[in-house]
Length: 147
Image (cartoon, rainbow, N blue to C red):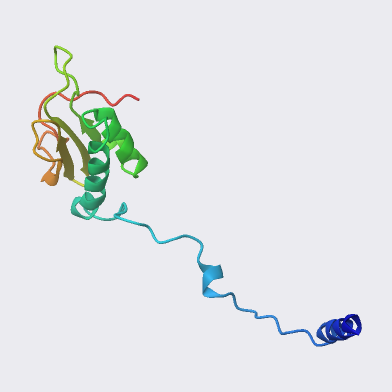
């Protein structure tokens, strides 16, 4: 008897199907989650991109590579900044000791995003400065970014 009732109900649902919704639900239309934290603003100013620059700097500063210039350059490139617009100072002294202070920068639309880290710096520091009259962002010797 139960089998016959089940077949009868199944037969009814076949002849009177439920209407299929034609509009997708809000969950189906969402393809990517909202970004967490600061993001690159390609059309923005240096000040608009300072939060991302600062976040990247702070992430690298919290790692064992906290005085390795390449780590900052690579992390900034991964965040979307242009490697060709960057400068970085040496991370080793002339006697091959780690530097007390490391600076790195990104030239952005005539302004400079500049970061400074190292044992002689109380905390990682990032700010926006004007581009130097001679071009670039950092005064003095910088190392080639050739990787």
